[in-house]
Length: 19
Image 1 (cartoon, rainbow, N blue to C red):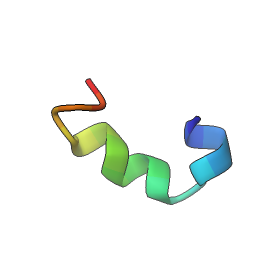
Image 2 (image 1 turned 90 degrees about the vertical axis):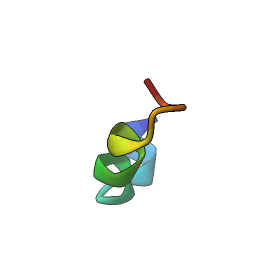
Image 3 (image 1 turned 45 degrees about the horizontal axis):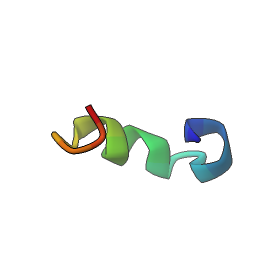
Image 4 (image 1 turned 45 degrees about the vertical axis):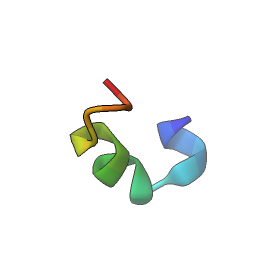
């Protein structure tokens, strides 16, 4: 998914829910 989100992927990685 990070590939689709692109730069936004970094933000999602910081989210606890994404973990």
